[in-house]
Length: 300
Ligand SMILES: [Zn+2]
Image 1 (cartoon, rainbow, N blue to C red):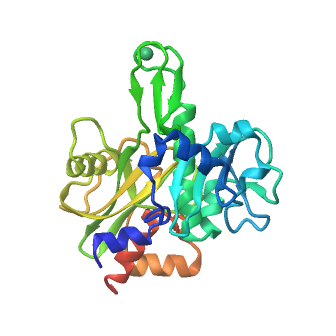
Image 2 (tube, helix red, strand yellow):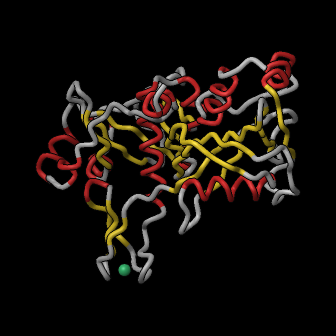
């Protein structure tokens, strides 16, 4: 399986949407699209909640006539699908006049079709950035969002800001037939996942893999390979999945980010999952896919 295929399996990835960047700066076409009866709105509520269907199995996409004119006028263009629907994001302090319920992105991702989960992730990341780009990082003045919500421009010094994404590496470390998994403080007993951390300034992805693994576990990585990527808008990460080989199973003290570290063989992990003494991160995470793919690669 190629990295492209692996990434396509990851939740929030491979969103089948034309982001239509040319439409962002076409004021006339944008106004028409915002009011078109075929257009659909993702509604973002306070505390990063999304308006979902009454059953919670997808996004409740709200037509323009259920929204106030001001909400439409300040909405963010997300893009267009192949059926000609334009998708927008609008924020609202109260529930829209449309059947549905407020749901967090994690709950939605667990049950929604891939398109809805991807659209919700994209909308959530943009909404978070808009909320945190209201002031200019250079002079502190307020900003105005233009380009249909994709750029913030300082009202005083004109400095532009664009939506940011924070890269993080997430790594399944192997030695012979065992994988190194960790448990964070606060997680239930027996819940283990791959090790992860943010890429720092001046680092390649491979440098970040070596440093993060050494910091969190003391293990020395000798080689790593890219696996797949996943948008992870909690609130603005891009997870870059890797597999890596360790020089030995020797571990150090770590930096305290993890409560527990274990080298587990496939048999250890399968037995633990079957008996309920071990559990994994949610199926929609790249961490789950990294561990799942490693389990599938061998029987020992
Ligand atoms: Zn400024």
